[in-house]
Structures are given as structure tokens and as C-alpha cells.
Image (cartoon, rainbow, N blue to C red; front, side):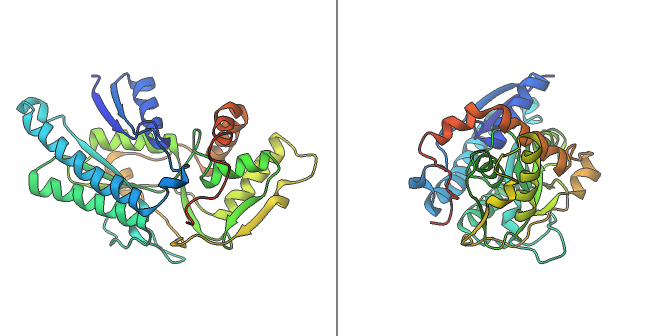
Length: 303
């Protein structure tokens, strides 16, 4: 039976993947709410914007969702869900071993992750205090088509295609668990429809890689699919000053969503990365328009 979804940030990277899945594969009715601004604008790339969006914005959504929920007939209340989507950054930084689980203590280390942690706590509070039916998810690093060129993977792909330097933060040994965006969208809909109210689910791709490993893998795929007459693209790798609050390692234990809801990622890092590179090769018009505007390929977030 088709359902009605309101997707905030639905024009963004993850949000648009969810919308495409809802419309293309399931035929649900979708309403998108999006400010249509983006972090590529350096004027809004600071902590105040994170607080406004993630704390004040989440509070506003919770208040309006609660008002709407309370006005629903009892029969329709049974199908209402407020799905809050967060990040593994709220848990802080891991050492060489271990994984983030749903019961891992929060220890955010950057203004962005602190604002996301605050929004998580607000959602949990609205569930326990006011009875708002919520489900929550914390995901690892996403990648895939339509990713804004500020981010590591698309920036490396495009710079490598243009023969530009491939700027790697610090020593390149920061570790992330990489999750293909369409797998994430599938997991989000699984939680939205089958998740237990008040519960949180970690979503990860089971793909731990250092940033340097990621960049080298991109170079290898591009050298195969579109060879550079000047030679292998690893020659373009350069090291730049690390960004503030750059956590050493994130790794998700996604066992709960697998055990309770039956979700597992379909893409390995190798298959997902190849799909991503192929998409950027096939869609230069999409990222070319962005590169010709205000964003010129900087690594953002250091200011």
C-alpha cells in the first residue's frame, strides 16, 4: 500500500537517494522540504549553521510533528513515524580496534558532531516525554552518485580526471567505514517501516578503509577506465594540513539492524566505488556545472 513521506533535505545527497527509491521502486507519495542551499558556500560553512540546522531545526520539526501526530485520528496514528537520521560522528573517535554500537557513549569532537548529538538527544526526549513515535539511525560515511565535490571520493575522482593534485588530510591514515548511498537508502526505509519505536539502529557498510587507501583505489580504477597519458594518477597525491577535530577512526557494528530487521548492504566497497567512478565519468555535466560556480574544489571545513 502506498504511503506518504515527508523527506527533509530531500534535495541533498542521501535525501535524494531516499526520494529516488521511494518514487522509482515503491510508488509512494513524497513531499520534499529543502532550503536548497549547500555547504559549498564558504559563507555558511561554520558552527552557527550546524546549530541552527541540527539543533533548532530538529526542535522545530519535533514540535510540528508532535502537533500533527496528536491531531491524527487514532487509526492513522498507528502508521505515523518520525525517522531521525544521524551519524557515527556522535560517538567520537575509536582506537585501532572496536566498533560503535547503539549503546556506545556519545563523545562528539567537532561542532558538527556535537550538534548532531544534541539532535539525537532531543528526538529521544520527545519520544519518552511526549510519546512521539520515533525511530533513529546512525550511519557511517556515505558515497555514491550525486555526491557534492567537496567530499573526499568525488573530489578525488574529479581532480584526478582534471590532472590536479589529490589533497589528502594529514598522513591519510584516518579510517572510515564506507557505505554505498543506495544501500543506506534501503536501510532507512527498512527502519522506517519495520523498526521498533524508540529504538536506534547503526547502519554501516562493513568497509573500513584509510583515506589513503580510498584515494589509491580511485586512482587504480581511473587508470583502468580512462588512462592518463602522463602516467598513473597516484603521482597526483599530496598531503595537506589536517582539519580540526578530525577523528582517527570510525567503525560501525551494524549487527542489530541485520539481526532484527534483516538488512545487509548489497555493495562491497570495490563494487560500490567502481559504480561511483563510472557515474562521474558518465555525468560530467552534473559536476561540471558545480565546478563552474562558487565551488572550485577546495577541501572545506578547515576554517
